[in-house]
Length: 556
Image 1 (cartoon, rainbow, N blue to C red):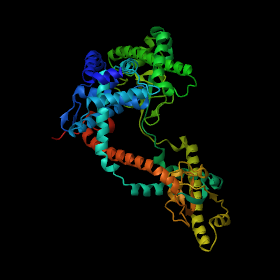
Image 2: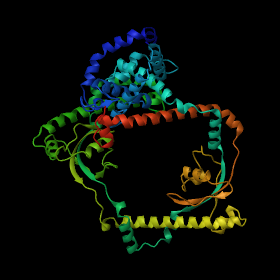
Image 3: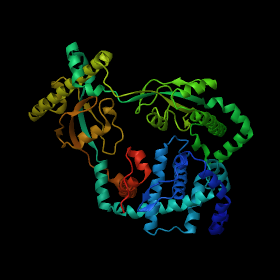
Image 4: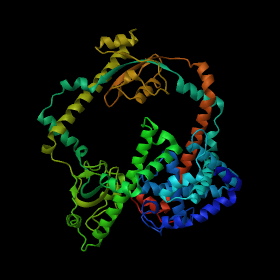
């Protein structure tokens, strides 16, 4: 297949696209995640030009393939929110518009080579997965087609050239600068520290009723509870649809699909599988659960159609209709937007919808997919933000007071040690001697650098970055001021900075320079893209979703 495409690419792509145009139209009319809930107008403007429904739909389809390429699954399977999908689509529209403006053109030959490389990356032993198999097993089940794949290949190359063009200033890193940065990141420090842990001072804190009450008054804002909601929900558990789905599809078909996917991508789909047989079984289970989720969503949609037809609209309609259908409605405890419900693993979309419910719109407009079930939710109650009375949270406040006072004592002890050690070391004592003279235990670190990912001696006392920051902002031969941490704090003595290993540097510098240039290039491009999004997305509906504000009117 790949050989045929390479030989006849120009006409073959468009023949295939023509054959799949019907599926494209069906996909456009399905609604749901990929088309923003059926919104066909008011799509906004980019660079002074209105966005057409067709352009946005293509960008969303491109984003689906982009997400699959990088994560191995499509965004709706990964519970990516509809807002993030829309943002990804608008971002691709920005990139495509800028590539067009800069005259970036991708030849047919480059597209075919890129497609060949892409399909080889999915195969084994450098053998490309047949295009027909990729379409049948990966794209078509998601309503995507060959025309989408061709467009994505072309856009992917154009965006890559755009990154190189707009990130060029960041890639201009001379070898001398790279060598200096390498030295800074790989030079190792020899250091010692004394740690002051809050837990060591808990026994010294006197917890009195008056002190706890005053603490509550002073820190009342800390105890304010945000707005909360409780929801009624119907749960369409996927396990209830597995047998029906398996019978409908057939065990043989599921096994064949699982084998085909395993042949394409190997064990990367299920890396925890120990044998090919186990991997195929797990893939088959994933396929079965996906189909069961589709069946559950269909059942939920049928329920919603009847629910939304009930008049007048009332939050109680969900409970009433569920009883009529022999279904059980559950109710969550009140939850915050940050935490979500405790009763089941809720997606970000579900929590977002829950906090938009009100008396006029008390139900989710569509079924909401979760990891183990599909949900219909309705408003049960809304609780405004409040500060609980002291009597209700007394034990929590008392514990907070105790921890606060212990941390204060630890930091005071650390500060006092810093001043005492400074004086004693000025008289000729070593850091270790000064520590012991003040009844403290010094810890010696193994040599570490700014590139170190772990510093075992600091574990449980301070974050790795806190240790590195103190070590490389303190002059060798001196001690740092007291450095506060979540656990308490520490004082560090930097003995010396060791010379860089020149042999290792000579060996690693070429690769390091390449990585540095690529990183700078991506950083420069990311800054440009962020500025473009900040300006252009204001003229699109997704701005409202991302910020909670209405889109600003477009100025010519």
